[in-house]
Image 1 (cartoon, rainbow, N blue to C red):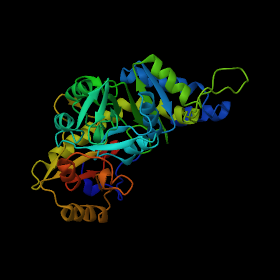
Image 2: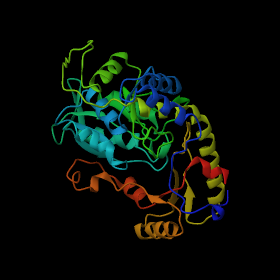
Image 3: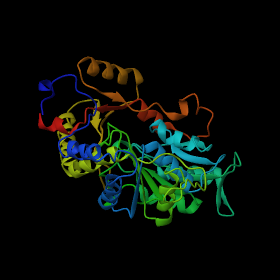
Length: 376
């Protein structure tokens, strides 16, 4: 790969359509099965479950909706707190907020770019206790119901010690696996360790359905409840409209699922090319002073959804100077997300010491990651 020869501009990540996308979508149009009832919806759910090793997959309109339903199904209610990394896309916190819950921001670690289990455990030792089977924030008096790690840019969080923290403090583990389809933690697909997990198939993800997401779980009862809730809680009947609770109109349309089936067929090839691209970046930046390429953590196999450079010191001006030079040259580089704890709607939420996340915010740069770049 020689980036000097690549046609500009080079986007950060664009979808790749090289398979049966047109044929499957056209079949939906020809048969007029275009909405949330159709064979491709069922097929995509079955294919996702088989690929990830989850017992069940339930598709939804987007990853945020999927995460919201996950949190509701593990018992998150209005006034509860949900432990969320400050360094994540805003949807992770929004999903909790939609339920009237309060994001409680926790720190990340440089090794995985995700939630730091050791630091979280020490923090909860000082600020929480279990009362009658419920974790309670001793400073606010509110229940802490769940923890939501994100596998940032496709790099798996260290889930074993995090599960130990969850077990000790009676917290539901809900994985935000929006970015990690194809990533493995100790040989197991991300999204299969917690009570449930959410996936995203937005246009910039490793595979896309245009817009879309999914819930993964090994709990059959939870999966049935997810399917019911995302279908406006409508009970099965040939013609009657009977709804037994407040549900959501969150089911994925057949058109989108058809696209997803075609994309999933190509996922092994996408992953092979993305990892080859990551290796070329690793070699290219190995001798560059002041910057390092972020490699997959130990005990993990990453999809390298977005490739990450890490500056050797925290300096927002320096980071932004790099972003300006590269974007002016036609390369779609981006910073990481602004820490959620600094956004106006979340600035008053509880948080632990976020010193590592603050450092990462000022050091991290995403670089172009479309699989086809490796072919240039």
